[in-house]
Length: 211
Length: 359
Image (cartoon, rainbow over all chains, first blue to last red; front, side, top):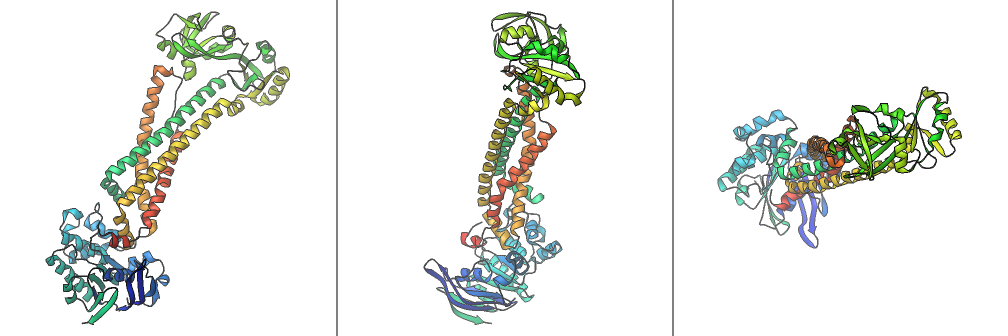
C-alpha cells in the first residue's frame, strides 16, 4: 500500500509539532523514522497510520483519503498492524488469545507464532514471559491479518539491545516477504535494516536516505 | 463467553462491587414487590372468600371506615340469583399485650369458611383465634380486646396472614366493639351472569350503600392503590440506584482498562464488538446477582413470615410472574447501566496508547 502525506502540519495549541511535511511510503518498503525526542516522529507515524488527523494537509492510501477508505475500523483491521513501545497485551488473556483477538482467520495463529518462535508460549499470560517474548506476541498480533503495512512506535524502547536487534530482524524478515514497515525510533541501529531512512528534527524532515 | 469471564476474574474486586450493588438493588425490588403483592393478594383473597359482590357505605370505598346497616341483609338474601349474604366488620384494636391486631366481626354463616383446628365457632362473648396469634399469645383461654374480656372458643388455620394473625368474633360483638352495624356485605351468587342486575337492585334497595363486583372493588380500592404506588416508587428508586451504581463502577472499570480498549480499537475491532464485550460482562454479573437476590429475598421473606413481631401479617410471595419481571428488570438494569461506559470505551482514541506511555 502506497501512502502519501502531503503538506502535513500538526499543532497542539500554538505549538507546532510538524511543519510542511511531504512524504511517500512505498508499498512493502521498510521505512525508519529516526530523530531525537520531540522531533515529531511519533506524531508523523500516528498521522500516517490513521490514528491522528493532521491539523493541515492530507494522507492518501493507494490514492484514497481517509474519508474514502470506508469504515476506519475495518480498514485498519484488514490493512494496518500496530506495534507500540509498551506491548499492550491484555493481561487476562494468554498470548495466543491476544493474537486471536485480532485474527480474521484463526488457522494462521499457530504458524505465525511458530515463525516468531513463541509457539510454546501460547498458553502463557504476558506476566509469565520475558519482555522480548511479550513484544514478539505483540508483533504476532500486528501481523496476524497479513496487513499491508505495520506501524511501530519505539518498539524496542523497553527491550535490551539483544532483544531489540531480534525485533528489527523480525521486521526485516517480514518486510522481505512483502509487508511494509514504518518504524519510529531514536535508536540509530534501526537504520541498518531500513530501505528508507527519514531523519526528523524540530518537526520537519531533515533528510531522507534511500538504500 | 470465556473472554468476559476472564475479564471479570481479572477485575475481581470491581466485579464484586458491581455484583453486590446489583444484588442489593434486585433484592430490594424483589422484597418490596413481594411484600406489597402479598398484602394485596392476602386482602383480596379475604374479600373474595364467599364474595362475588361487595357492598360498602356509599362514597366510602374502604372496608375499615365503611358503615352499613345489617337490617337489609335479609332483603338482599331473598333476591333472585343470591346464594348467600354475609356481614363483616373490619377493625383493629390492641389485644393485650399486642399493640394492634386485626379484629373481624362476621355473621354466623361465615364461620364455615374458617378451618378450625381446635374448639368451636364463637358464641356471644367468645372469639376464635388464628393459629399465628394463638401461638404468639401462648395458647390463651381468654383475651382482652380494648380492655374487654373474651373467651377463646376455638383456633383456626388460614393461609391468609391477616386472618391467621387476627381475631374472629360474632358480628354483634364486633358491632359493639367498633360501634357500627357492619363494615361490608359479601354476597355469593348462584348465577354470576346476574351480577349486573343484582348490583342495580341492591343499590336501589340501599341508597346509603354501594354495591360492586368484588373484582372491580379490589381494582379501585384506595389502600391497594397506595400500596402499589408506594411499591412501584420504591422499586423504581432501587432500579435507578442500581443503574447509577453500575454506571459509576463500570466507568471506573473502563478507565482502568483504557489500554485494553485502545488496543482493541487500534487492531480494528468495531465499536459494536467492544460495547457487546462490556455488556456481556455485566449481563453475567446481572444473572448471578439475580440468582443470589432471589435466594436472599426468599430467606428474608421466610424470616419475616415467621417473625412474631409481624404476627403473620407480612406474607410476601415471589410468584413466577414476579420472578420473570424482576429478571427482565435486572437485565435491563445491567444493560442501561453499562451502555454509557461501554460507548465511552468504544470511543477511546488509540492515540492514548502512544500518548499515555504505559499499559
